[in-house]
Every structure is written in structure tokens, then in C-alpha cells.
Length: 284
Length: 313
Picture 1 (cartoon, rainbow over the protein chains, first blue to last red):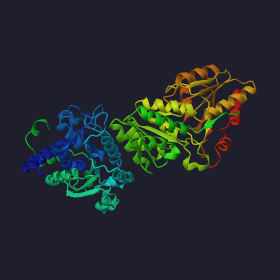
Picture 2: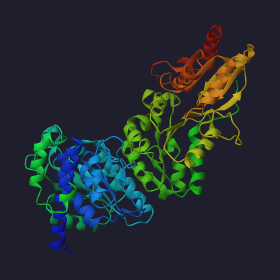
Picture 3: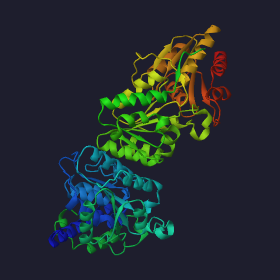
Picture 4: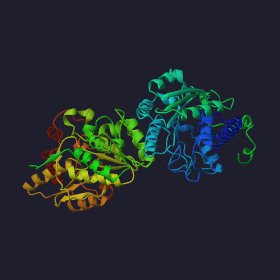
């Protein structure tokens, strides 16, 4: 059953709010990773504002769905989503990367409410997802584990160790996304270390595979629904995305992988994202 | 010195896991394709639904263990010490220790006890590596009974623990009644002339040395430091104050492990002349375990020589 157009438009508005939060917090911190945060925004928004069963009042609720940001450097998108969902005050977002803060440069499960597991160095998130999915099945919970992978991180061998294990244990409660913006730190994925044919690789590892436009909220929502109905194997959604999506001068620029905007750039970015609803106007 | 009985400590690990499996429904075991060697096959037989065969992929295994721990399980992840602490080192450091997840890294083939297998399978830097990681507890039991009790203690302790077992048989020095507390060393022999502070399979060598020294009228104190971290500072300072001479014994490089840990404690609290027994910045080689100890200056005869040098100080 397809979701209504109204829901899709609501999620699209929410994604714009999150993009503004990302730019604002990275500008405030003068440090962080805007490119990969913006490319994963629509996926993270769909998960946190439509699919995931979580309780901001009880972040450790054992039966909750889990989220793992394996590309941990993109945590501004996660922090923005968690704050918007009420896990901690929105005002706290500007403490990103600051000393004594709860919002570390890479996600820290002991510090940030709603972070299910720490990540940050690449290649480990899918393995952790396998462990969580096994644990949830042991407990008889129908909770799901969602893992967002970067494309560059697929260079890591451990990802494919995890891919083998997830298929072996028939983890149909595990859904992975590849945030395929095609840019890694040193350049185009196809130059740094080619990962194609990517869908064939996952197929060969016995995963159910989907390939979508990672900025089409309709495709994201419909595909997650389809993946939830897969039985007996894990699913991967290869989402074609644009690094820096939503801010014209950041789009497809690997220079914006890990740098903060200056005042002029910040103002331009916020102006481009200003069709986000008015609720934002006050706090950021 | 003749020992009545010698058993690989990994056997005690495998046996105790089954006992613990009955007590702790959340205890799970992960294995990297060497279950007959690490002895986790016993648990696999008793609790197949709580045994996860992860194949030859140790890095993934450690992170799967971390994921399981976040759902309230008590994962014991087993492989050889050289792989558990080095191939999967970053996984252990960043996602098990930093996160303080309740994962037990339980590894066989510590030190040169895998003798004939050679350097690839001998873990001789693992203790130094694990000891420098914050929030990690490091335990090396000396014999079969110590292993039974300390594996049990680790299972009930909440937080990351590294456990190291032997492949080859090592002498049984304790009885089944002996009790162990994590972080509390054990005084096995009292003496006034020199302190032999040992860990793991080298505790038996310390006891052998004690006997050789006694024949020459030298009375050595023997201490089993089964928990390398947190180390029993009080016991170490107490024995050093008493004898004023300390020799450390470890089946490991002399850098980073027990010798370093004891020197750090004494350097701060009670500077004391020392000798360190262990591999002296060298790799070992293939060969029978006892012959390797002799060749690399780690048998009782070598310890006696070190003690004699120290007596001249």
C-alpha cells in the first residue's frame, strides 16, 4: 500500500528542515562534514519520520528499531534528525564537536541519546548491524536494523565479510543503504577504487537488491516498504545521491566532504534552503 | 621439578563456557572457524542456537559481537590471540573498549605456547596492545583451575575483557577450591631475597625457579599476577618493599607487558632493581614449547641466572 502524496510532501519538508540544521551546526562548529550529510538526508528523514519505531523518551527501549550510520562522519544529519524527533533539545545542535559536548565529531553511543552504536572509522557499521539483527531475532522482537553505508567505505574488506554473514544468517530484519554519491575524499569513486558493478556484487552475496534515486522521497519510501517485506535474506538499497545535495555550490564537489562554510557561504546556503517551512526561522 | 599434571588452559575455557551457558541465557559465543582449537565446539554442541560461526573473518566477528552486546547479550568472541588482538585491534579498541560494551575477547594460543606453528600463530605482543587500551581488563590465567574461575569471573563482570589461554599443556598449580578475584594477584610462595612476579604459563616457571633457588639457599617470593590490568599495585609494592629485588616473567615481549607494567608501578611508588624475563625484542620460531622457552632465555635456568645477577646489585 503506497503512502499518500501528503505524507511524501511532509517528509520532503522535514528533509529541508534537516538540511538547514546541518548547515547551521557545521557553520557554528566551523568543522564537520556537510557533503555526505546532505546526500544522506532524504534517507535518514524517511527512516526517522516515517518508519522507525523509536521512543525519544526512552532511547534504550529494547524493542526499538536500530539505526547505524556506518559513514559516521555524516553525523550532522543524524544529530539533526534525533533533535527533530525530540531525543535532545534542538538548541544543543550548535554544540557539535565542542569540548564537553554530547555531540562528538563522530557518533558516540555513550554520549548522545538515540545513538545505538558508535561509528566513525569506516567499514564497521554493517558488521555491528549483523550483531544487532541477530540479537533482536534471538529475543523474538520484530524490530529492524537500518544501516547507512558510504560508497567509499565499500572499499573496506570488512563490509564484505559482514555481507557474507548477513546472508548466512538470513537477516531479513536488516536493511542497508548505500549512499552512492560517487565521491569519496580523494575524488570520484570510479577513480579512487572502482566499486562497480555494485548491484551485481550485492546480488552475488545473496542480498535482495534495490536501486533508487536517493533524493526521491517517493522512491525511498516505497522501496523501504518493499524491503520490509523481503523474507529470508537481507536487503540493500543502492541510493544514487548527490554529495552536498540542496546547496548549489556544494553539490558534487568533493572539496565539501569535510569543510565548514564561511559566513558568506553559510548565508548563501541558508538562502537556497529557505523554502523550508517557517518553523525554522526562530531557532536557526 | 616434576609436575603431576599439565593441561592446556583453553580446555578449561571450553568446559567453563558450557557451565556458564546453563547459568546465563544471554551468553553467546562467536567463533572464527577454529572451534576445535579454541574449544568453543563444546558450547556449540550444548547451545547451538547461541553459537555463531563467523568463518575466517575476525574483524567482522568482533563488530558482530559488539552489535550483539548492544542488545544485552554477553558475547564471548574466540580466536587465536594474535588475530583477536591484532587483526581486529581497531574494532576492539574503538567499538568494544571505547564503547565499554560487554564483550569478552577470549583467545587461545597465547605467547609461544603454539610452539611448532611458529611466529604467525604465536601472540607475543598481545598483552602490551590490550593493556594500553583504556577500559580494557586483561586476564591471563596460569593453569586449568585458574582459567575455570577467571572465565567465570569475566562472564559476570560487566565490561570488555581480554582473556588469553595456552595451546600447549601447562602445569596444574592450583586446586579446584582456589578462588580468584579480578585485579587481585596471588602470593604463592613467601621469601625475603627476591620477588618473582609472573603471569600465565610463566607462573609455573616461577615456581620451578623458586625450587632451584631454594637449593642454593635463596628464598624467593612468587606472585601470580593473573590480571595484568587493572594490576594489583598494592601487592607489587608490598613485595618489592620486602625483597628489594624483582624479576618479572612473561610469555611475551619484555616491552609493553607484565615487565613494563611492574616497572611502571615500582618506578612511581618504590623504585626497585629489576630483571625482565620474556622475549627480548625478538620473534620466536617453530619448535616445541619447552625448547623455545629454553632457547629464548625464559626457562627456570635462565631465571636463576637473572636472579643471581640481581643479587649482585
